[in-house]
Length: 408
Image (cartoon, rainbow, N blue to C red; front, top):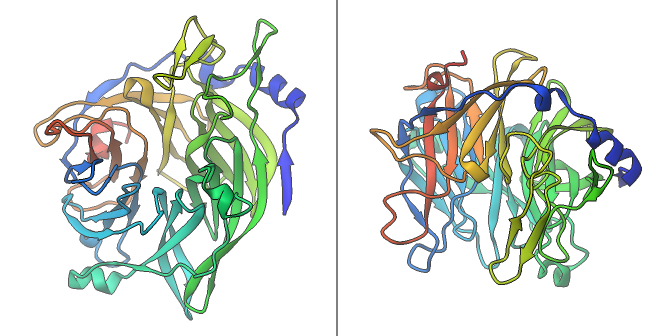
């Protein structure tokens, strides 16, 4: 497996150069509201330690009204919802499992046929897990997901099970073609994995790795390291691939949004920051009691308030569309032109008639496929502070009609 690591000198020079997004005026975020929401998940013993995080949208090949939203619930496994937000299936993570991110692979050769498969990062066990989506079961109203993970799938990043215990494991996820890009928790490493169907089950093998930088040269000539708990590096979670252009967009949470070239199952070597977080370059101190960093001065970044999170693409043509990311620190969302990466719009999701608003969002998924109730497509967002919450930690997913963004 070939490893690509950007040298410090090259990366620091590249990062110091301002991108087109940094020089553009900030679009004024405007409030939209959700059309519906999924049932509340509670991150406590009574709620099964379920904590919503990342959604994916599956389009039924024949019955658009039977399309599904699949969301991770960390220790609570997976939840599957219909277009009204009703839960139709719950999948347990199993002993030691913690499901972090999910994406869809369409038409994967499997058992002599082609299947749509939900791919999940199991952060608890440092593995990928795979669930075949059965359109016939959906039409019957039965549970649509079937576990097709091979029994001997390899570890993603850890050398052995003892290293898995440290939980520097598979984290963020984006799929394209027959490949998955996976990020490593508490590290800057990204890996590409080729997915393969074998005897009706799915496994994978690593084809490439890339290490993003953890230190950056500032305009004042100093070197800056993002604040973090000792021993941890600035990690990536939110990711999406523009398979038409061969580009990965990766959200390095305390740094910014990267654009990284892909070629087949490998990183092509080109990487640049589309936009930095506001706190980029700012002095900060880690407090071990609160496990938080306190920023004590101005930074050199853009509009995104750390963490930069969920990334998704809404396509309007073969090479055209919109890139959307979550500015988790101030509960905003920013939209970029997919072809040029220039800012287009910004919005928030406010309390509305059918659902409360969205705060501190992690994951996002969008489709431009017309669906019942969503003639120009659907946007699904993780809500990190669902209300009413009954005095408990409550999360869920909000469904937003793409028309409300007024972009198309």
